[in-house]
Amino acid sequence: MLRVSLRGRFTGNGLSPVSLARRGLSIQVLSTPNDNALKFLSKDGEMFQTRGAKSIMIKNTDDTLIDHSNLAKTLFVQCPGIEELMIGDDFLTVNKDSMVHWNQIKPAVLEILTSHLSSGDSVVSEEFQNVKEQKEGGYKVNMPKFEYNEDEQEVSELIEELIDTRIRPAIMEDGGDIDYRGWDPATGTVYLKLQGACTSCSSSEVTLKYGIESMLKHYVEEVNDVIQMLDPEQEIALKEFDKLEKKLSEDKKELPQEDTTAHSQ
Image (cartoon, rainbow, N blue to C red; front, side, top):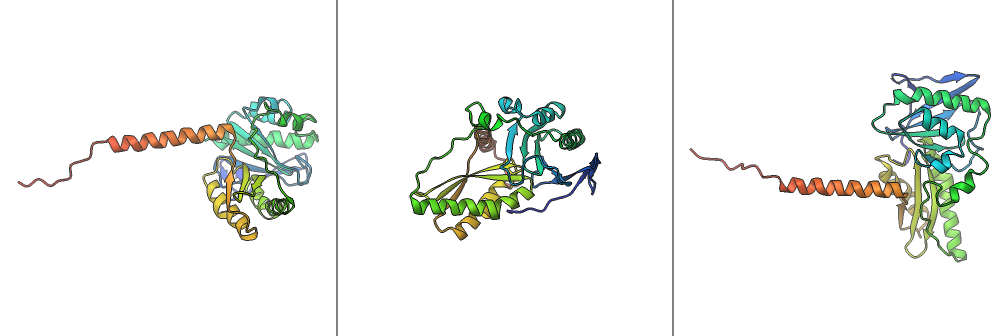
């Protein structure tokens, strides 16, 4: 499940091979394992960021970050229903509201991205990275802090190298990304943050446990577990979902049981 090949290109009516060419540019639209996420790939060498740059995450609620990205602002304003953007080097992943159909926003997204690549403008302002580190920067996650000795530092670097070279490229193929947040020497736990198409994908837990965790444990004996770090909005949504599941389970128990005893005449 680490690498899921559910790829294809979209037309206005569904899946079929097609690309948008304008001003010499072509953008390929690829499906992902997440039905509510599409990957928009630049095919002619035009880049959203420098090659190999860390992906940028911007949510439609991140007003501070949006103010420092004209591209994000344009997409959120002109394409209602987009919830989150992940901007890679040569691609951009769009996560949408499940109630919005792709036909309603995909043509506008293609138009906006093509125009942006043609302009040569930067994706974000020079102040973006500094703003992102501030408390009001949107999706800040509490980072675990670990003090490493020399041997532990080598283990952490090995884990990060494996993620960057063996795991991250495969996840980026499917419109996602992964951010290494640290390794706890006391418990052997690796902390990661899944991004892009992986954020709300139903198979993300499978990818995490049977793909990422299995590979890291195979190559690094000090790894015992892998945990995905959630931002505040994801934690709230997960808690609400657990409450709903619990309530439905309790309601089911309270329903009167049907009497199946056979009555003799």
